[in-house]
Image (cartoon, rainbow, N blue to C red):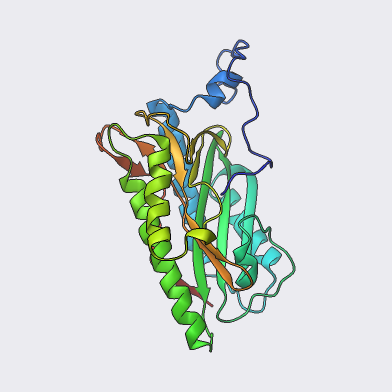
Length: 272
């Protein structure tokens, strides 16, 4: 999810190095928690957390949305994450219709309506390592053809921007190159002013930590860095769209690019 101060965000100091408890892999030192480069075991745990979040998304697509409050769907997401092994759920954002235009709207009392786009952003910790994914779904039954056409147009722009951000992970690239690539697609489509947050953040034993995919961050992308790629478009009073995957840079199976740790579909899914 777009970064803000909340549970699950890294607050440790890079310089602090208290001793690690022997035999306690879930209690790394603060400096290790913030380390942007993950080893193979850490990547494996992040991949498992991502797969669990993907499974929760598969389940949430089967529940009823229309006629229910955002917070009721959020409670379903929380339950599904825990069923798939999360010991901690940090956030279950359910942002329907115009609420989707606020990147940090939390689940509230708005009743979800047919034709709404709903931004679902959710994650937490599984086996001590984080998940964080966002998908946007369409509630079946809308009757406004003009709105539906714009929704699909914007969704396609965000999907292409997200792919561009992932594709920007190449040898020699910097963190800001990921932001620039995703932002260029949205700007070229005429929606640049409606992309209002950075493109990504790191993840590890917290759901928000360095590195950050943002203009001005010229740190080179290194093998083993794990971070989100999550562009979005937010049209005030109408709707929002965001798509987010966690990726790992330059793993052994993709030495010159990124591998997604979330693999659920990017096709616009219709829910009931």
